[in-house]
Image 1 (cartoon, rainbow, N blue to C red):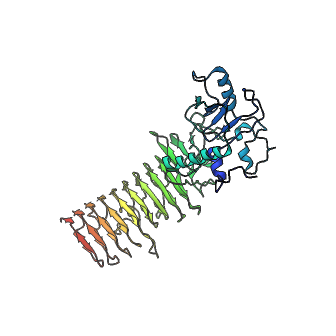
Image 2 (cartoon, rainbow, N blue to C red):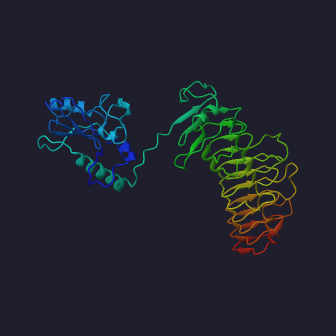
Image 3 (spheres, rainbow, N blue to C red):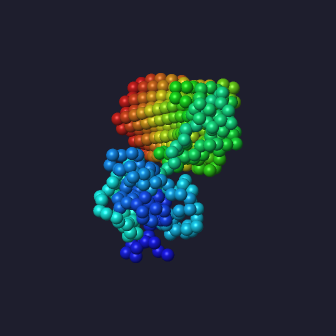
Length: 463
């Protein structure tokens, strides 16, 4: 049976009905006026009582001088959730039987800012026809789109915040007053938009698979990420962060964490993962070849300290479309930034910017072989922008299959130990732009150019 008028070409969809909670109640109880009828347009919560229309939001209206006691009592009854056994007639159009028993919690409610009781125009007893109900429905839908700019999409669930503390228990609900004990338990309950705060302390736990059996969930966008963070103003030390799951982990933020054994991204479909305001290092006893940040994919490392790999690099990066900005990278045995993929040419569109880079290239087996500040190779469109690079074995090197690289706005000085120029463009580099850099007091004066198609613009160099 069609419940909408024939003049409407298409009936409201299931989503339209359910999102707005469009319900027209059909009861057989006396409505207080001696009439065996009660009408409701439900889109705006309009109820007819004794020939008057009431606008009800969020349940029964409060006492109001504009409502007589008798009308107020009736309005309270009419604005309440229908009793079980009184299914909304429009829901029958969705295939719900009249015999379906509905409990109060199953009826969608209109979201309003306050409960109100407003008497609308008094014109005697009237009924709202189905034509009127649907005209109101479609008008409200059009107004919603016009004034909010949004299609009829249900609101996202409220984001949740959970807590972990060294004195917590995994039997707790994870609230601030009753935190979890383990990071794994906290991560296991996270959904898009949620935040996990870890309270102060040192945790003998790893984040991410395979060192942990708990996979890090993904967010859905930067507006609804999954956030794992040290509690503001507190120092939190964890063992490592590893993402080697192959599930395309994305939209995850790690904030205010000190990581004792580095960041490893072993799944190249990982993207939109951000580490910020933290510290990444490795154990002083780490063997040669272990780097602080290693992997592929597309990530961001921002405003953090990366240091202490005696036999490895600060970053050994084989990924693409990544941003490394405003970090301090120091005291690593090899390069601070090693942008390179052996046997491939796919390390592209990475940006190294606004970093302070010092003390790299001296320790362990990698020290003294030309390592130092930054090497860019094995890809195209990589950039080194506005970095301060000093006191390393060497400065900036572009070589080994690098194409369309830009080196711009850097200050490179006192990299005197390896006998290298502050900026060296090797024979394996093509179409490099070197502009607006300040280069002085390095192993070889000036900028060393061997690459094909190198362009120099407005650089300041001194011996």
